[in-house]
Image 1 (cartoon, rainbow, N blue to C red):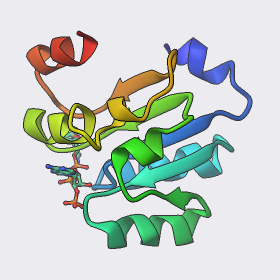
Image 2: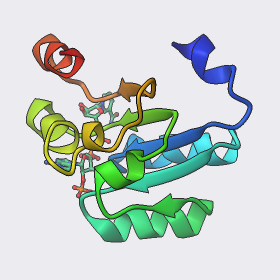
Image 3: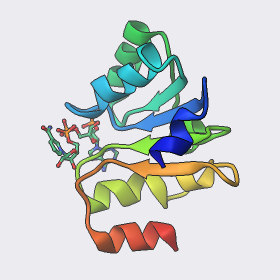
Image 4: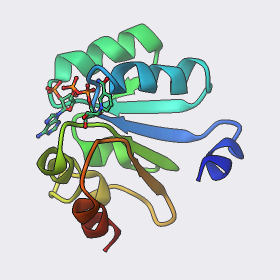
Length: 118
Ligand SMILES: NC(=O)c1ccc[n+]([C@@H]2O[C@H](COP(=O)([O-])OP(=O)(O)OC[C@H]3O[C@@H](n4cnc5c(N)ncnc54)[C@H](OP(=O)(O)O)[C@@H]3O)[C@@H](O)[C@H]2O)c1
């Protein structure tokens, strides 16, 4: 997967969840990686702050952030939080294009990983 990602000189990336981990991770993808990054955060003010700081874009829903993205990163709290930003009507799976790759960084269960795969 890592090899796949770095083959893109500039990828279109979505990042969902700008907590202690996600905020700087998304920033590195924008500033160090040079990727075109769109973020979503449940508390919108944090996403707007991120976009101002790093020069990326903020979306109103996870699905909107994921639209046209080559890679979609998620970093939220737990299994249920992960479900709420992936498999709901406004979750990333509703917006992702065929062939896009979902990369979950949440400390989540194998069970929810299987659900998302299915
Ligand atoms: N921090 C660490 O050192 C560390 C180390 C290893 C692993 N991890 C794991 O990494 C993951 C993220 O950790 P963190 O420290 O970044 O957590 P955090 O600071 O608490 O941030 C959690 C993020 O998830 C979002 N979120 C939570 N529930 C949500 C929901 N139901 N719908 C949508 N968004 C939701 C929060 O949005 P809001 O801003 O709106 O609250 C926030 O952006 C966790 O699984 C954690 O166990 C963290």
